[in-house]
Length: 611
Image (cartoon, rainbow, N blue to C red; front, side, top):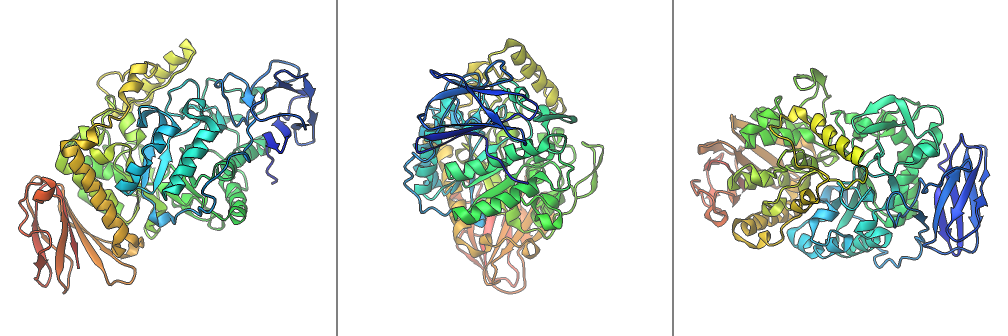
């Protein structure tokens, strides 16, 4: 299949306009301040027009069948919002400073999720740039931006986006995003975007005016499913495949996190993600830079990260929700109300050793068996987290983990992901135990739609057993409360927790055992109902770490892995340095000389030993 580019492609004073509308008879290009231009249609349903005397920033629309004018479905910029005209963007005009950037190896990435609007007081790309040095000091080397494709209004999670190619105008537009990417690369930070290809938001969605982008054959909880395998689907597949390539080529993005890939339905002989894989591999060779695809998937299926020749979708990694669920219920007993199928220490041990906890077992929540085994799949194929926008925002009070569990358990949770054989992922503010909530928020203009969002929000998450309605997503105060308070990292235990995260990240980056991702060389020993030992080895087997997690309320006696050798405690959240309980019997730096080391681990703490 040949991938066709659509939109306004500008270069050196010339611009080619292309729009796909296979069932339309005519198409007009309407440029502000110019006569209307009739576009030419080819056999594949693409209308084109070329101009030699036009400048970047010019506003334009398309008029199908001599009717109403609409923005370009492949618009690269909507300076006046989702209902306004599209604007021509000259991607060659931006003066990139870090042209030698080649990206970072996947195994080295430590992710940090950011909502651009809520991360800083400014709520812009420029605001994010002002915090990059802070992230460098933390040790983060990859930021993941919640969706920045154009959405209605000025505040939104971004999953209601309606222009997959356009950069949100209120954040800073195309040049603002490029400046952020350039500044991040200058500091050794990769930039990932969260993108939504499983549905298109309701307000400002004009795709139906042009072509059969949607199908009634499938359904999603958020809107019409995308037509990837029905009649006229070639043009739809090309449109979304080109969107992936667009962020890589024009914005120097290092990768995409793709939202809810299980809601992208394709029963064709060549799956959509197989098509994307082929196109991406060609572009990678030409660009000479790393580019990764990370999936959010509810399938618990290894095929998401398998290569196409093995029947897979060829994602570089996928989110491991089971890790979060298994750990969270152990950290917060109230979590059993939300995740009824979790709560056993052996499930968390399985998450460390195999990956998917549900790998074919019967799951009460789903009323069926769910998942397949991921044992043997290398650890860098999974992303783990204690918090993300969903886990926080889908609570009635928008509570972060730091608002649900005590300080000791926050330290333990941080160690759980940063010492894991997976790619760690932090949610903005997690590293200093932010006490600001993170709510779901929107800023639509249609009153009927606003009411539908409020009601739909209530229905969608009724399984979470909310005892009251969440705050109104449309209310600006809901958004304002969700902004981080940047005075907190400098105070009391917030500052101490921040230092703890920095110590863990430094250990992860420096110790060979934490840079080895072969899960078949990861041992997990369950000590009791609340305690386990995670045993990590370097690739050459010469260096070892034993990470002991005690989630119980009592001191636990633990035998470290044997035989032989001497274990040295290198980090202990229960130590006085970290304002712990101090009821371990061995101090940091003291050698345990027993054939197999034995220690007493403080309640709600983690200790790390090196052999």
